[in-house]
Amino acid sequence: MKKITIAIDGFSSCGKSTMAKDLAKEIGYIYVDTGAMYRSVTLYALRHNLFNADGSIREEELKTQMKNIDISFQLNKTTGRPDTFLNGENVEKDIRSMEVSSHVSPIAALPFVRTALVAQQQRMGAGKGIVMDGRDIGTVVFPDAELKIFVTASAEVRAQRRYDELKAKGMEANFNDILKNVEERDYIDSHRATSPLRKAPDAIELDNSNLTIAQQQQWLYEQYRKVA
Ligand code: C5P
Image (cartoon, rainbow, N blue to C red; front, side):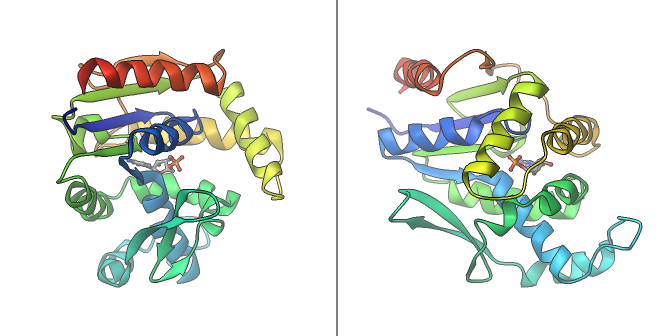
């Protein structure tokens, strides 16, 4: 079977990461969660006081500090999934906090942040055999990917999934705050000037609002078998 590139894009909390991770594991591909990379830059900016009190970003400072931000992934032997590392520290849990979620979209809208992270993503996928999920993978990072999926689900369904996920991890969660955050991120992600979230013309759309995880996995595996 030939090695291909698989791009999975879609709105916040639509289950992209679960789909992408499970498929990568099943077919022995590398998995890259690009949202985790934007979240890591955001965590760095929060920790280094690069946000003003009004929520605006100290862009020039962040721009100079981009060279100090090293993001990598390492397989976690217990979960069988990659953990995210920021300058050598495992930040897998910290980057999922509501604080990071509510600051990440403006960070991800900055062109210099996207240029740096997209270049790293392209290097990681240079050898193919990769499943990457995000917002612009099929449109910008790998426009020639052999398989592109665009995932959607209603905002309520996505907020409920996020809520359940945070609760399961023993983290603080409030459904209405999460729904508001999901809707705000949808808006910023699809209206930004640089690489807005949109479906690539050749992407296959999947609305998974009413699918179980097992059903969506099976659907995804069938799409993979058609092209690989
Ligand atoms: O996928 P996740 O929800 O963790 O992504 C967090 C945020 O990172 C998104 O809301 C979006 O603003 C940004 N993002 C992006 N491009 C990507 C992946 C994520 O702009 N490829």
